[in-house]
Length: 102
Image (cartoon, rainbow, N blue to C red; front, side):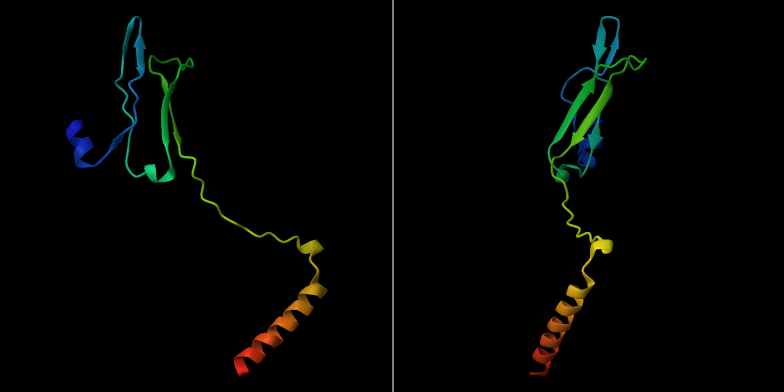
């Protein structure tokens, strides 16, 4: 496993918490590996102790707090002022054409 992690530059997210429990025995057989997700921000790895009907705990990975911002301008076409648009467009377009001709 160590060779594979090094060969492919993988990141191990486990924090040492046990992921398997059976009676009094606990171990960490479940590894969480990734590559390339650190660009999205900090990564938080944790186990959940919900009853999953399995001796394995669930694993939760929270990836980053960096959200890609997409600015979208949305028009309410029913309330759009077409007369004002025409006035603005005609005035702006005439100024643009005059600037190109000069």
